[in-house]
Image 1 (cartoon, rainbow, N blue to C red):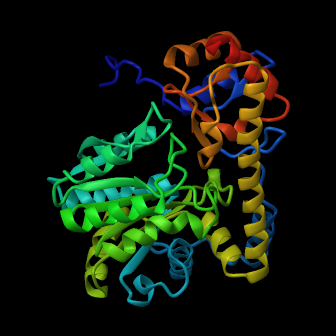
Image 2 (cartoon, rainbow, N blue to C red):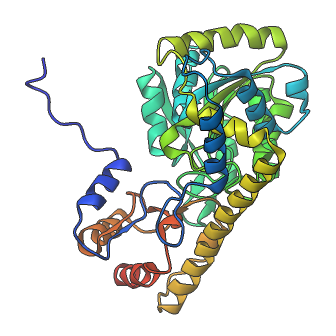
Length: 397
């Protein structure tokens, strides 16, 4: 059965990390995989997380299975985080939340659920989007198409083309939207555009599926939920995949959620019963540890405030790195205007580098950037900034 198989291509992002690890160049720089790094190039464990883990270890009395959808306390805290306390969707019992293995798990469970209840739908993703979006929905059996989003000429949002494309999406189709810190471009919609998109969704009858992987990495926890709030106010139904890999630093603990919002409580219960079936035949029930960490932090006022401050520190570092990179590129004598990098949000930047330039930087300089020019600016440190800028100058002049 296996003898005639050919090797599958490496993952576009994680494959870069494998190549980076094998690279003997002491100057090598990894700007590929999307993990936060401090100025020493390390991905730290947050102090709030360490405190929570110590409490969990001290009080643990069982390793029994979690419920299929996870703990109810976790679900309630996730809902408050993504929508805010006392939001009408919560008080009206229109939302149900499942604890999933990371945001990716939330997306795949949502995809499997939608394939069952809406098998003929087309799934629409932004052009460009996170490399794994297409794979997740295609693996679930969907046809995936693209809508306009990023404008390479302006290095910003192609607003008119975006609204035109979404205005043509058929009723019953699914549209995947990045709530904040768009991956890979770093370009987000403003509040007015979100309201127009929400109005289009309600009028056209398509289902928004919101990928909320970076809450708190853009402007702040409350500010970053603006797009979701616009959708929740206007649309009777939507799905939200949340991730706590970035904002809690729980990359290896695979902690996320899938939230389903329906028109009323009865419909939410019915729909969520099908979500639970999708979970049962996939991984049966979620891993507990990461969810316990999130629950411990969000349910303790002092610990939550500590985490909020640590999250703010990560956000400030990313903003500072963007400013430092733009200034250093300009100082190096590069004629290209890279100021757009400072306007982008989150860890990722569409750098404007071509695939040929990206290949040169990888092969000749051991600088690892994703094809298409997407770089993780959090991987830039004071130690590698000069080398990075000098290398970029070689390829752009």
